[in-house]
Length: 244
Image (cartoon, rainbow, N blue to C red; front, top):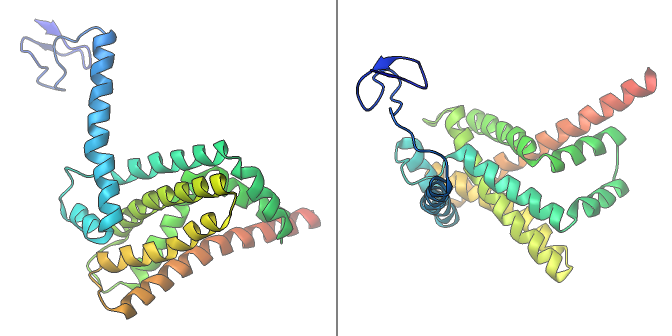
């Protein structure tokens, strides 16, 4: 009889019948590590790059297939967003964009606390992306309540679109750094309005140009609401500080 190293159950087969743990495990050595690296790279190639290609060429239809059950080839939505956000933050730090953005924001400051919240949001891209996605999914669910999709399915949609938008942002940062022209970064930001409108329109199978205008305003309202909430929070917190 063998004792399972995971659940302490006694068994005499190759795998534990309760938790499925193998009765034998290889020692962690260079061969084990090389196998894990190869497996990781293989999975990345067959998931991450496939998903990126689909989000570039046909985001709406690709994400709809994922939601409807075709999920074997796609990189998981949260993992995709985390990976691209981390890469975006790394590139931004590498090119020292944080200092540049902070100096520009100081010239436009309405509230000191709002500036702090805005800097926190740009510094913690994963969290700010999550909040924006919640706004996007909420407004889309409300405005397209007659459609068959629910909040969580829209959440997956915008998680994928935001993940790919991080890659667009990386291109904008890179071109800006090497050309010393901020127009590239600004263009990448504005391109988000077009990309999200296109992705949402295709996802909903809306092919009329009026539908893309509607999806554009859904994205615009969501972005304004997110930054408006930051601004309102900053003003309220400043008011509380002054009157304490």
